[in-house]
Image (cartoon, rainbow, N blue to C red; front, side):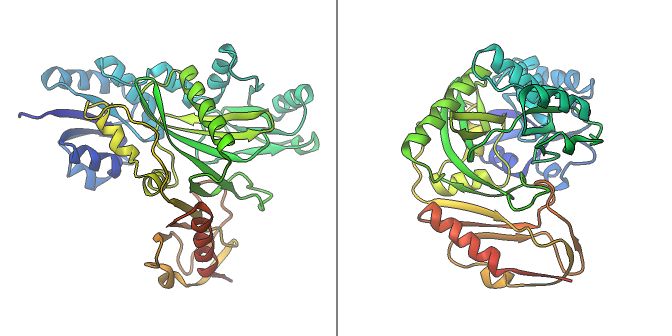
Length: 394
């Protein structure tokens, strides 16, 4: 078979596979037996269903590579990022090194590396019980943040303001990290790196569920571009470029979350993939820059490095967080669908189901995605939709 490119996609993803098809690449899909999408299997050249750390996976791909060489290994799935980097490295294909990707997957490793490189002074410690947290807080002070070392989607993030809160506090069977609370507005920075040259696609302003005392760090909205001064934007962009260089993230998409503290930007975490919550769609609507296009084009040698795109309009997303309880009725959805500026309105709940508290990004009840000439107008439109869709709780 005469083809220009043959790529490995770890973890699927319709958006990524669609781009690969568009640019004429043949796809070998690697996914797990429990999470693969049947529709993707029908569209790709070959499918390998196994766990990502299966020791037989790499030898099998090496044998295929010898018969019909691969051009790239791509993944936008969190658990597929490190396996993809290791496979690319073993096959001699371009991309960020496995060592750098591993640092992004483990918050303790990231903090240790940044300290070693004299980039950040944020203290931290791995913890597994309340006594570990107490010892850290007594040395460094309250408040502190505790979260899983490799967590995503705002899962299991906890804040402690006093020793009393720690008494008999159980931690689940996960590895955690504790560090001081970083104060200041939160942003994420969407970047594509071309061989170490970091192109800032957008600075995203983030909103969290601050009014919920139990789950205040659940993200409930984003807007591109962020409503910040030119000075703050420049400080954030310069900081993230230095950060990615120090982290040795050289190629492809990255999504870096940070807070703009009184002392300047300070990183929270980073990922070698696009952001979740439809952030790539916000970026594409506001700037015209398609990060998934770039993710396929760059390793295949189809594009040259690009300059930072300009935002010609704005796009926002807000999530529904109805009062917990049994849904009696939902009204207003059809009125807003198709309204000017409303790109998508999705509800994952229906009448008769129980709605719980939004504990993380995976337990929210739906969202509205809208575009407008400015960030303020996009957020205003999202707010009108959220208020206009009435979820009646018994």
